[in-house]
Image (cartoon, rainbow, N blue to C red; front, side):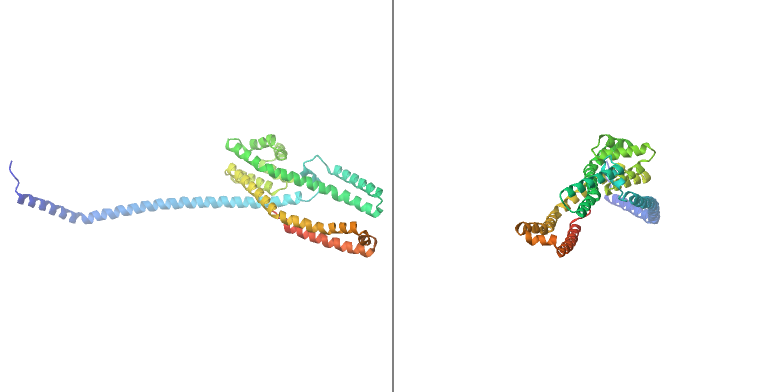
Length: 337
């Protein structure tokens, strides 16, 4: 084998490097042009992609705006309808109040029982030896005030029971809807297996559907017998879902959570205001307790208030000021959540 001359090898290497550098110098401008062209093409493609993304985002924003506007319009319409219904429901008539108690009572029954109660009180007061005017006053108060107070007590008790059970009923509806049941079947499930008085109210919703009302209309009609903000929230959720669509199970789940938080807040406010309520009760009862103790120790000192006309005037103005003070304290310690 013949050995290669180092000089020849070096010359060959230098010649190859020189040829490569010459080719690169001649082709440099073309390579740069192709790079710039590729870069422009990539920028155009990315711009088209970005334009498509921007257009898609704009379309989504417009769709969300349309949906939000539709929901707002629906809410305004519902508020107007609710105001009209509240005027009819919140008229304070005996018929509506008796329907809210959940008892099978009618206005004629109520008036008959009020009259009977007034007569009983009249005879009892007359038999006790009281004056005729005082007897008629007590009978009037018993016939007019006592039955209405009892009805109000029954209504508030039933509403409290409804609020205690309503979030649990919503949770059952959420699980039913997630399992694949339609809303109508979920309502029927509560109407058949729920706790009172929720079961009765949902049964009325089902009966309203059977006479031709839609589910949102039947839920709104629940306000007639259970005029509560929580029921109003429920009817609005059902109505919005029927008009605009959406995840009903999620909406009802959020509503159940909100109702529980409202209940916790009411309990917290009630606990914080118990001290003020106790103070108000003590302050309101203190004059009567002192008067009773004075009467027991010195009857002649207190009897003049009942036998003298000036004592009557003093008791009248004292009663007025006491009533004003009690009302002021009541408004100070009552909070609406």
